[in-house]
Image 1 (cartoon, rainbow, N blue to C red):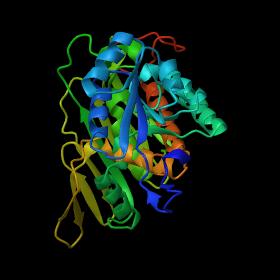
Image 2 (cartoon, helix red, strand yellow):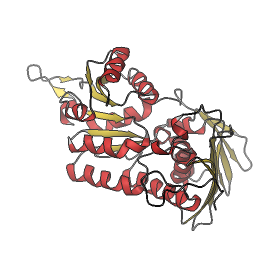
Image 3 (cartoon, one colour):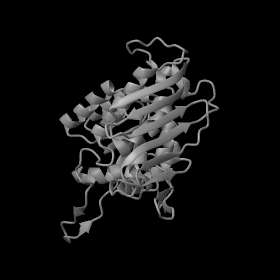
Image 4 (cartoon, rainbow, N blue to C red):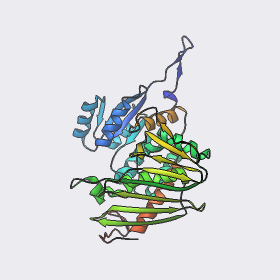
Length: 352
């Protein structure tokens, strides 16, 4: 994005500060609102436009956040010449369509996790972005979190020896009837929306597994309680869980041959962790800012755009595809199919 990099004043020869990166927000729900609020914390970010399938919704969102332009269709937002990058905040069942619309218009895209419903939906988007030379990134904020990045540095440098186990869980309860996570038509269920965090955490530490085992309770077309076991050629394993019916600890740990790293409640927006090493006192590491924010991933997108990069090294596209393959494998093991997919007959019976 050459027009957003630092510019030289032709009169004085002095370098002018880069102009703000202009964001478009696609969708107007609660996640879109939180992301827009966090963009306001970045002085080099500008929310230039919002788009929705409803003109009224777009206009209401624009008034709420003082956004200059409101578009009544995704195509209009994608075609807006005053937008550099679009944040796709729709439910996951619409990610493929929305991202494709933006890429075809030549717009850089940050797409909220999970990337899509399946690898089959994600691969054509990656291919299209590469074909068109357009930036694309999955919105996995955990990967951009400074505390998580510090953890991966320590693991890579051998602080806990060879990794042998990863544990992570994400569960919640008390969802109101009609909530999108209970709706199979919108890609609901525990796995894709919140289970993606434990799975992505395991991928970050151990990579893509060789073996995938899973069990789930299915109800009304979604998985409501799911357990996952990933196996690796190194002998390491990852034991993960996600739930819509249990408020789990939301913790994670990485255990190696020489120690372990433990994250307290809220590992997916980590603000601190404790390093336990054999023969040493525990060490606590804390982040420079609150972890529960979209700021870090938005800043990474803008850094990459200004550097002319087509993907982020923190959230590489091949990594997002690998996570989708693991999620696909889990869905295959538990028999979870969404409406319109082959074999979308649902059962409330538990599966292995």
